[in-house]
Image (tube, rainbow, N blue to C red; front, side, top):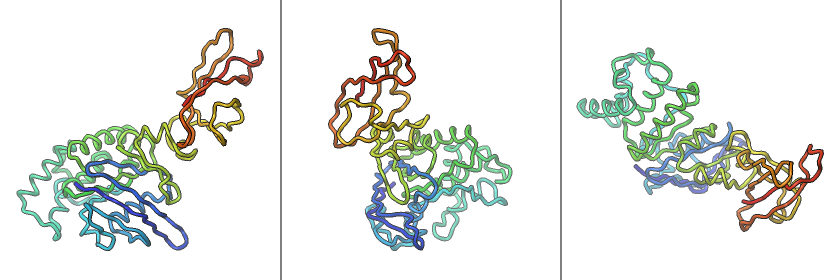
Length: 316
């Protein structure tokens, strides 16, 4: 496998800046997920790495070699698209074997048979090798599409929302399968999705994108617990994080210039505090420059006819 590095990469389509100043490194054997809404620049980033698009600025490197001006065939990457893109007239075996029979990497049939058998067992489709692609279920077709990339054994795998067209149950199953395969093979994968569950369950690191820019990157826990903006905080978590104006909490527990407090449901505790009345414990994330601190403040509980009560312990 191989590491991938993008250095200050930008790409425009007319007046639209699809990717701007993106710098990202993916370590050998790492699974990195790009998370963001439609139009964030995720797919364009994959296409720039694959060589399907040329950047207007910046460089793309694979295995320490700058490949910015190389054609896709010279980059040794495999692309798994959102659509299955199988050959309907071929069997599962021939669909898997197709990349190995291309003029660019023609192999002998013994080697092809061995690789196809290994990949089919890995994906649990060895019983389907003689079936036509049209006789498969949606989940089986997606496994074949993924297998067609795995059988090549490239340096890097690029996956563009490969599970988005499946139902929820199949998505959950294949998420686990993909992560298992990645760990067993030690593959380097850049995976694109708008689904926060996929990002949180599969990624070694997450990169959050918006309007062509990489807003924040880190482990799933870092992104969830220490978002660097309200936008990033709102991308992860179910239910969505509550964003409350800081002045509603009052007190001096917050860092200077704080305008918004992020409040997740698991951070709230309602309990008795010496006398009847609600008590809330709030954990919030401030800017990274602020020193950790905690304190107690008091404020009226909205809707409580008894007036002010022991209120919030605020700590990060």
